[in-house]
Structures are given as structure tokens and as C-alpha cells.
Length: 90
Image (tube, rainbow, N blue to C red):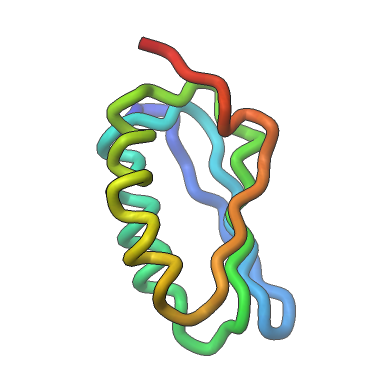
């Protein structure tokens, strides 16, 4: 995992908010997938905010893209937001 990657979480009633901070690489993507799976029970929506990402490495992006259909097919609804999702390094 990128040394400076962090997932900050907080909950409001039936929604879980996750804010991604730092650099997003392959290990960070796996941590995000695991965190989504571990925290999906008891919420209707999970909002993942990627505005705090400094760099998005192609391998991390590929892991999310390969797993996103399986993640989003399950309950709860998962919403990805953030202007940095399109920024890519290497």
C-alpha cells in the first residue's frame, strides 16, 4: 500500500462516508475493496470521495475497474465521487 494512503470513515444515519487520502496504488485498491466489503452491513449507501487523492497509479485503477461490477452488484449502493478520479500517474 502507498505509505501515505488512508481511508477516513464516518457514518451518518444510514450512509457511510469514506474519504480517500494520499496516493492510490494496487495495494490501496485492495484495501479499499476490503473496507467496502467489511463495512457494507447496516447502511443503504456508501459514498467514496476520492478528492483527497494525490496520485492514482494505473495498477490501482485497473484493480478497481476489474472488481467494480462485483462490488456495485451487492447492497448497499456505492457512489464514487471526486475530481481526482481521472488523474493518473505512470
